[in-house]
Length: 252
Image (cartoon, rainbow, N blue to C red):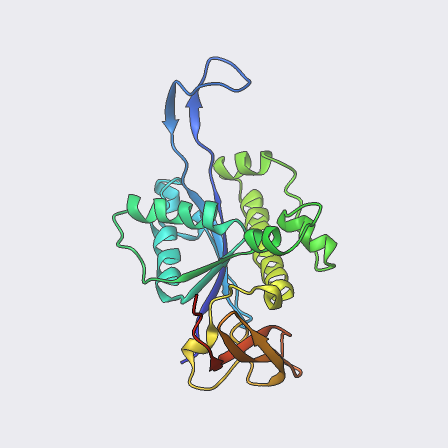
């Protein structure tokens, strides 16, 4: 059974709070806490993009801050996924999604693995910037849409449909860029979830390509194993290894 890999990004409204001043203030009270405004998602290797915002639901006219239906649709995608990819997803997007799931009394979705491309960039490389748009420009893959700043969020909260269209375009482009960056960096990920566990054939653990070429041997202190590299037109170039073919007990 082929794995289901979901790429996604979400946008939230800011908190509205009472403060005494302008810079580094303690919040006196919340007038309204944040909510989900939109999300964009797609399945890896599929063309269809799923991009939804609050105005897409009937509840918007009655309560433009009611995100329950939007959150429910994202939950259904999470529940279907084996692996979820997001940029800064482990710290922000996934936790924000979980916060809205539990707020609406939803059960945890089916367990999944995560790939955070921000962590990947930090772990394996030393780029000048690990921001999504900067990685896209540096790697020649494109960049994020310029929102013009916080005013776009204000206009969306004010119900301006032109602003909502731009917000959804912005959200969608983030996922388009996310997929390109993930595919560019995938073959470097030595901790990538093993896609070979989802199929019966011997495949590349990073991309599930069946064309593997033997490339010498690797050694640990106690074992020897065959090394492979993912090759061919659909190959990602990642390295992997087989089961130990010789093991010696480490006696001290």
